[in-house]
Length: 374
Image 1 (cartoon, rainbow, N blue to C red):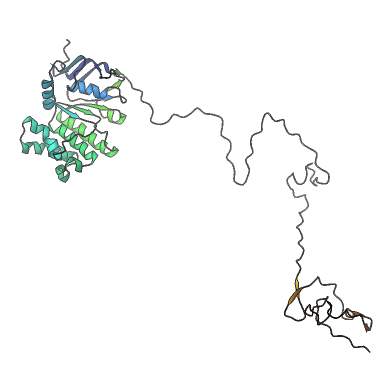
Image 2 (tube, rainbow, N blue to C red):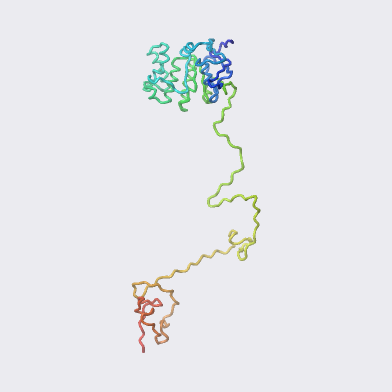
């Protein structure tokens, strides 16, 4: 058995531990912690951080290896001695808050002191002091655990671990259930209290920012101690550069598809006769672009629609034909030849002034009286 160094308050050598299912948790891990030092045990999930803290604190007994605390072997102690050591000299913070539901916040924080034999008033004073530092004082200190939020319950657990002024504080992911703003405040309070009271802290974390607050960092990977742990990046890796993307499609224009290499190239055809423009491009006028030399396009002339002509009666409109050529005043009226009237249509005809059509004439003009014979 090798004696530990004198300047290490906690020392372990060649620790081995295997779970009940046979999976190895620790494989020959050795570590030493000096008094008043903040040591961060970093690594991904499942690397053995929690198992290492449980072996160093005496919660579990390693299957092989040595654990020393102030030159006292912990690995040879019985269960009762290890339990007494944890109650008097060690402090523990779980990743999830564990409180007694029948006690309020300050009673949970003062419970380890009262188990040591400290008076109720003195234990309450020490507990309220740490609760005020962690912003859980006042009315929140008199509430039951089910009346507190998750972050407030975790702060009560941290105050319970600091109220007993332990020689070594084991913190297993103490800021896991806290938000980012609460993490900074709790870690700042924890590190300040450790340096002011000379508390040795072993902090297990998988966050690089939290590990940066410690004095020294020990990295674990698959139950072994390594110098550097390459954690997977939080961002997705960029794919290798491929071919350039096609140009974006502009509004109002149709994107052309790339030519098919299996299809033979299209040969230019001769322009049809009569459709070659005057610009001399050699392309049909309907295909090539228009230029200023081309004649203007003629607008399509629309024909006037037939109109309705009102009859002589002035009450009913009848469809009439197109008006004929305009005649002069000296021309004889229609229906006469010279000075004699022409033949009249039979009674009831279309040209009759009193016919069934309603007095409409072929010319569309006013009714004409019959010319008496001379």
